[in-house]
Amino acid sequence: MKLYVVRHGQTEWNSENRVCGITDVQLTEKGEEQAKELSKIVHEKQIDIILTSPLSRAVKTAEILSRGTNIEFVIDGRLVEQNYGEFEGTSRDNENFKEAKRHFSNKLSGGESILQISQRIFNVLDEVKERYLNQNVLIVTHGGVCRVINAYFNEQTNDEFYHFHIGNCDLKEYHIYG
Image (tube, rainbow, N blue to C red; front, side, top):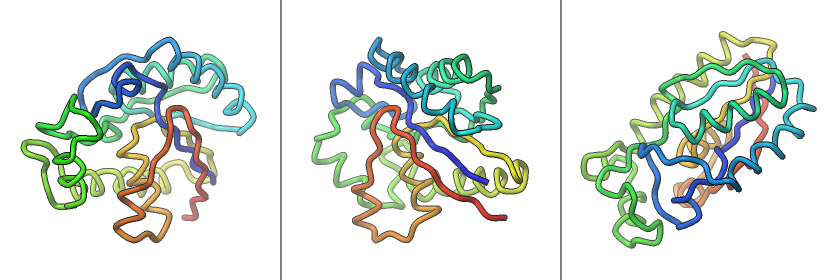
């Protein structure tokens, strides 16, 4: 079984280098084009099902991928991005934000900690292994969730985890063994 993971297409806040988090920001025209291009690649991957975050930027990406591949998609609320609390909408270069992200138990002043997001995402991945045995699954989600998924499959230092980045509509592949 293969698991494919993609971060949604570009949003206006992505282009402005702002933290999106759980704020429901729409795709830009470029983001929609990125998804259309990605659907050509996904079409070749023999995907059986697409799971997506409920945020509109991920759903729109999943819709485009679904149309381009004729693969059904299912919304899973647990795939939503990390709630960045008071940092929603701020610059990704904000030094307070960068420092707060280094503390994995930090709830980001009203948001969600890395430990909390890890618990829900690890639960999703454990269920995917059981439920979709012998099927290839594509998850459409967000940068923070992609970071946690990568940690599920790869040993990393805290620094490697912190610096992991996936671009808009970049596709990662993981092998899942029951």
